[in-house]
Every structure is written in C-alpha cells, then in structure tokens.
Length: 144
Image (tube, rainbow, N blue to C red; front, side):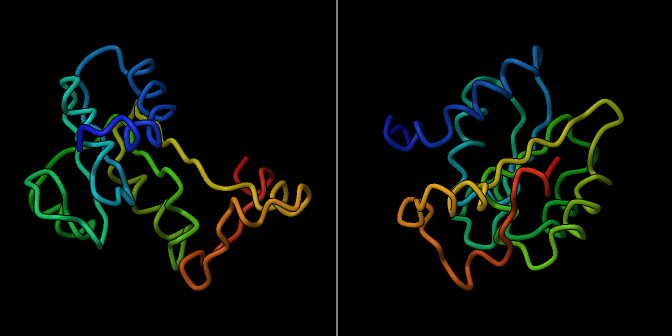
C-alpha cells in the first residue's frame, strides 16, 4: 500500500481532509476499494475506516455499513465518497443513511465524475464508461 502511484489517486482528497480536520477525527471512506485512503489517513493519526463490498481483510475495513455499525460506535466527523456514489443502486438512500452516521459538525465529501463535461469534451475513454458498474451518471448541477 505504500506505492506513490496508488497514493496519487487519493492525494487531492487526502490533502483536503487533512486541511479541514486540524485534529484527530473519525473518518469514513464509503466505497473505499482496497482501503488505501483510510490506510494513509491512519498513517497521519486519523481514526479512519472504510466500507466496500470488495474489501480485503484489515481490521479497519468493512464489507457493509451494517458490519461497520456493529463494530464501530459513534459518529464520524467526515464521510468521503470518492468516485463511489455513481456505483450505488440507490444514491439518495445511501446519502440519507450516511447522514445518520455524521456528527453534528461533520461534513460529507462527495466526488463523482461530471458526466455532462465528459460528453461535452468527448472524453469517454478517460471516464471508462462501465455498465452496469456505473449505475448513475451525475452532472455538477445534480450534486450541488
């Protein structure tokens, strides 16, 4: 997991979170993939957890929100959805459920591909249109 190439995929989110969280905080990376962002945040002293159906066996990664809620009690200061919301069957339901896990002064960081921009610039190859993996397509107006 210490590969600089892999770290570069999460660098923007990583810096953003560390900038806004000036002290040790509890963070959830929803749709964490193999858990690299949570791993890097833990290296900086954050209490980070990840949820993804494809997680590898690590003590801070969980296959589902239900598994996370059984093991980790309390709320999160930050919840990250870094290119994961477009893969959810019901994004609104997921956001509502994640909101219940958020502390009163917490925030949710959502990053999704802007499908309108991708079509406008004809950059489908960089987007890697994956059906049925990409279940939803968002524009900037959908998220704002």
